[in-house]
Length: 267
Image 1 (tube, rainbow, N blue to C red):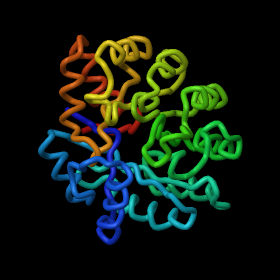
Image 2 (image 1 turned 135 degrees about the vertical axis):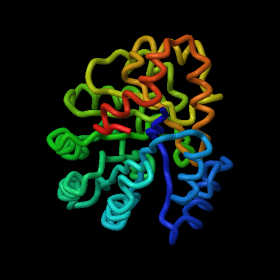
Image 3 (image 1 turned 180 degrees about the vertical axis):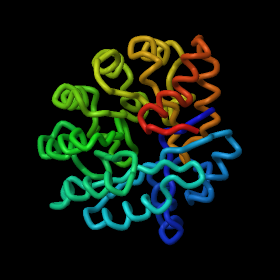
């Protein structure tokens, strides 16, 4: 069984423009057309049983439409949708209440696209509210091509958040920090708490020795399969994990058991 904890798709009316812009920014060749249909087709071809969809409100005005769409598709055809709030929205805390009430599984925050350093205390009320509502928070972590020279979610900054909110369930994308894995290994890996690291877009980017050091230090029970589809094919991360010198039980934790624990679902 496989649960991909890090995927993206866009509503049909915006998918073409969104994918054109994101493809130009990233320089990556997407493995789907960015639509929900495309994601479901990729899930089927890669053997993915469920996918966590992570929408991002890049403007305060997008909160309503994004969270409404996420609620509409949540729980259908293996889609487990998160919601999103924008830190600059005056009603962000109210929208967190709505996200919880509509049954969305958590909140996605993207420090680069939402323009904030993760340790900025203006985010603390959002973190506190997510903790109180028991809403897991997925952060983009580390490098992003949108902001190549300014890392908004460094291992140092994320460590401060983890320490300030020890009861918040935190998922750090890209194994805790894309291309910042030395800092992750030194500062984040092994840190106690509900801190999970997903594997999005790490296949072919991180060496096996460093990957194993981070997994061994942090524990396979806090690592999540993730692809960042459509920016990587989940089959690549599955193959990467299968090649690792881990037990079958450890691999199953990464592939689906840890995700089930966070999502509180049975497949």
